[in-house]
Structure formats: C-alpha cells, structure tokens
Length: 151
Length: 201
Image 1 (cartoon, each protein chain N blue to C red):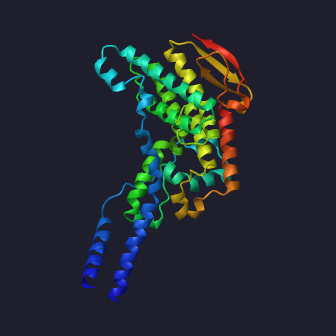
Image 2: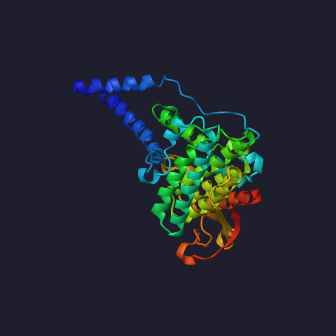
Image 3: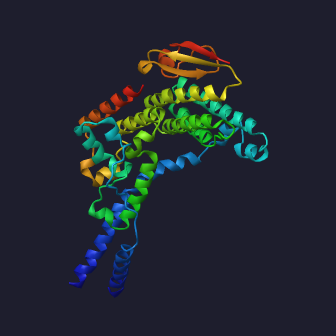
C-alpha cells in the first residue's frame, strides 16, 4: 500500500510539474484579410458551422477548452493544430491560387462526405463540432457553390 | 482522506492520458507515403540521377516530368479497369514522384506555375491513394487538369491525346498515350464515351 502511495505521489508531482512546461498556443485576435469567411462573405449559418467544426485546427485561432490547456493533452493538440494548419488554414485562404482553391474545395467536400473530417477523436470530445447529415449537406452545398464560382 | 486524494490523482492522470490518446488517430495516414513500391519504381532512380547528373540539369528535369506522365498513365489505366486498389497504389506512387520534382531548370515564372501545379496535383494523388472509387475519379478529374497544364510547360517527348467525356460531372478530360478512347471516369460502364480533343506533339 505504501508503495502505491509513493507511485501515486510521483505521478501527481510529475503531472503537476509538466504543467509548467510552455506550450505554443494557437491564438490570434486578428482575422486576416485572406480569411475564407471574409473573402467569400459567407452567410452566418454556414460560417458558424465552419468556425465550430473546422477552425479549431484549420485557422490561427483555437477555442481552447480547459482540458486542452492541461498537459499532456495540450501537446497532442498542439501537434494536431500544426498538421491541420499545414494542410489547410482557412485564415490564409486567399493566399491560394484559384487552382489550389478549386482543389482544396474538392478535398474538403469529399472528406466531409466520407466523415473523415472533422476527426472522430475531435467530435468525440467536442460534441458541438459534429456535423449531422443536414449540416453536412448545407456546408457541402455552399462549398460547391464557391467552387463553381471559381471556374 | 489521503486515499481519496490518491484516487483523485490517479483518475486525473487516466483522464488526461485518455484525452491525449484520442487525438492520435489522425496521424496514421501520413506514414503510408513511405511505402513506395519498388517494382513500380523501375523507370528512374531519382537519387542516383540527381547525384551523378548535376551538370545535366535539363535532362533530369525532363525525366521528372516524364516520370510524372508515366505514373499518371498507370493511374489512368487502373481507373479504366475500375480497380480501386491499383488506382490507390498508382496514386501513392505519383504522389512521391511529384514530391521529388525538381523545377530548378525552368524560368522563375514557370517555376512558380509548376510549383502551384505540383502542390495541387500532389494533394489529389494523395487523396486517390486513400479514397473510394467515386472519389478517386473526382480527384482524377482535377489532377488531369494539373497534368495537362504541366505538359504545357514541360512539353512531352511522346505523343499525347487529350480526350474528353462530356457526360462526366459537367465534362471531364484526361490524357492518354493512345488515340483510342478508353474512359477512366466510367470504365466498362461506358468504355468508349468520349472523343479526342487535341493531339499533343
């Protein structure tokens, strides 16, 4: 029993300890001019879906929940956001050429259709980010309109 | 009281590690590209070429775009055969070829254009590598446009036929090395739908 207590204590101390390690927070007050929603003047009902379901990992500003500020969850999230932004950053949408925009829109809609995005592990925790079939259809229809307007 | 504290601490740890683990699954897909099939890679060994032929930049260039075309044709044939697995394999191969595309011998304007084309094509090749048939074909349509634009810059040694099927998704074009139409968007469902739009070289 004593050994168990010691182990628990060590775990507790190290858990508290790692909280002091720095994390890079993905946060920004400023919405750049190149932002997808700004550029396309996206209607509110669609833009709020995008912001809740996509923008946490695909923009410069993540809405952090309390548990995402706690290590080690914070590390995994940091990694996730880095990867997500490398693939697609909605804030930098207008930096893409029309070719890339067209391609990205195809990739985005296909991944939403296939339930690849938003990630299951993400919607598991963030229930509000889950896209029901009707929400999916709304978003996809809108994105296809944007795609058609490019061509 | 002490027992409660210990239990709380352990539960907190368990919770945090669970939360952390749940974020992990998104990472798996990226390792696939490492698995380049050696048997399909017979045409060119990029590393060897790049190392030994520093002086012959244009030769290397040419071979890069040639290899892209060769990989594209393998993919196109797999789609004609409506073979999802072969298409996925060809998509991954094309993705890795595009990654190694060396644009340095082109003018800066061409480089800019080529880089944009390659970045886009790479993305669609990647998605073809892990999608179902219908999505593979959708990405192939955009990919084909990229490859045609690439050929407009790099040129081609072999004669290519730009073919077009007006029925697929508002019209879809592709490139082939033979004049006879074999439709990659429908396969056996409508094998001969389409016409030659343009003969290149």
